[in-house]
Image 1 (tube, one colour):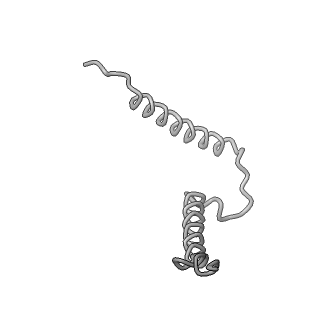
Image 2 (cartoon, rainbow, N blue to C red; image 1 turned 90 degrees about the vertical axis):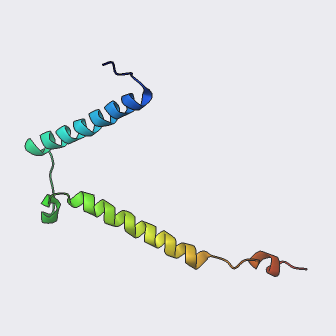
Image 3 (cartoon, rainbow, N blue to C red; image 1 turned 180 degrees about the vertical axis):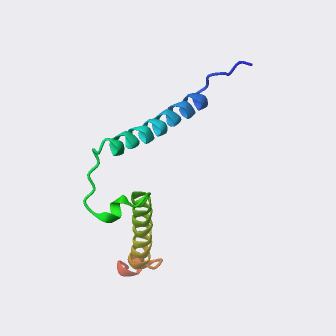
Length: 83
């Protein structure tokens, strides 16, 4: 059976290679003590994953709230500048 090399297949290989390489590089850096954490909670497994997710969720909620706060009523500018 022959596998056609398409863009989709190449992208899957590229992403798999990048993800695997990042994982191996992270393990090597951790094993050889290159990573220097300063606080105790940074050693919690997947701390930065949850930290990033919570930070992103907070940014989305703040942006949504600002959208409601800055929202103008329909016809706001027409009423203001009617001559």
